[in-house]
Structure formats: C-alpha cells, structure tokens
Length: 286
Image (cartoon, rainbow, N blue to C red):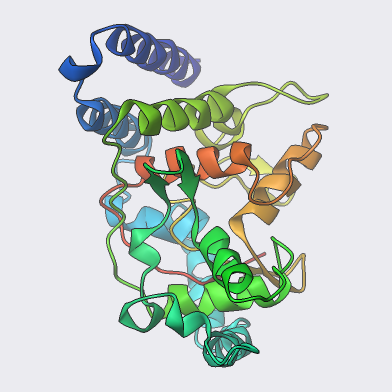
C-alpha cells in the first residue's frame, strides 16, 4: 500500500538524519532544529493522510477524524464524567501536608503549569513529567508518593491540566543529553515489541483511522495533549502512562512501571511531535 511505503520511508529517513547529526561535534549540533524537522515530518504525514482535518483538531484525538463520534463526544462533554475528579483534584492540590505546606507550595501560577511539562532536567539528566513532579513535591514535604497511574495522582493532574487549558505544547530539546532522551523515546515509539510484534507507530500512524474491533484507531499526533482521561473502559480517570501500559499489554508486551524512564522518554518524544498544538485535558474517552 502507498501509505505503508510512505511510513516505511519516513521512519528510516528520520532515524538516519538523527544518527548523522549526533556524529558531528557537539558544539556544532542544533538539537532543537533536529527535533523541529522531525515534528514537521511527523505532522505532515497526518496532514497528507487527512487533508480535511485541521492541525489544531488533533488535540481532540480520534474525534478529529470521525464526525459521528465527535458529535457524541461533544454531547458527553456538556456533562463530563471527569468533572468530580477536577473538584477532588483541586481539594487535594490545596490540602495542607503535615508540615503545613501543600502541592500549591511547589508550583507557580496556582498550578496552571501543564504547558511546562514534560521537560528535560539538565542537572538530573532525565525527563520530568507533571505526575513525577507532583509526587516529588509530596516526598520533599514528608508525604508518601501516590500510585503512578490513577487515583489521587490522576485527579490532581486533571485539575492542573484543566486550569492550564489553552497552553501551547512547546517541548524544548537543547542539549545532547536531552536529545539522547528524545531519541530513546523515538526508538520506543517506532520499535516493535510483544507477541504481536507491533509498535506505537504501527497502530497510530499506519492504521490510524481504521476500525479495530469496535473502535477507530486514534492518531499519534495530539496523543499527549488531553491526558489525564476518564475512560469508560476504566470507569475512572487515569494517566497517560496507564494508557501506555494498556497498549503494551494489548500487544502482548510486558508494560513498564508508571513514570519509568522508558515511558517518560516516550512521553517526551510524543509531546514534542505535538509541538504547536494546545493542551486541552482532561478528556473523556471510551
């Protein structure tokens, strides 16, 4: 198929450019330019596949592709199932720790900081996600971390996402260490794994828009903009890393723990591919 041939050309070419670039002297490499080139090629793939879909609409996930599903989703959003989670997240965000501080003490702008995550911490040499930062704030103030993919952590993340709606996705990759993390996330996205020998790109690029059982496969572009999500399948709100784990399980691959280096790097890469879109979480999904 033409689509498959395009995708096969896109992936090796992107990886080859990356390999050549990192072989140059470090001081000569503009890492952000390399990422920007990847992002342009990535987004262009979807623009060519679905020319009738506006780029900004990819923040709505699969509902950007299917008008009937989008109409049903919009009706559901009038009374969103995550509304109570936002309220609970707000209360938890402002609830004092035993030392008198709170999560609000750790984040500027009242917690409306979704647009700052994920980012690469140059001192620690690792990707920091919003959920990771929330738990690190708790630990720094003598509290126990929350489980990493649902419950209170997802509720606080949902509240912070809600008050950050409209912020622009703008991942920065400004050093070799950051670019290495980005490349690891990229390799994970395109790498095949599990009993079904499938990749993230195989589903969400090659088969995007097709029916898989009773569902339409969502586009990879915009994946990270709307999390956390309330999934009907879960009956509750959950984080992006919970979804990553579920995808791995679906293809017969062992999932990594929430906030593992693997999933944080994957989030870093995927979010960079959505640079220019807007954060619009939390959201509801089937």
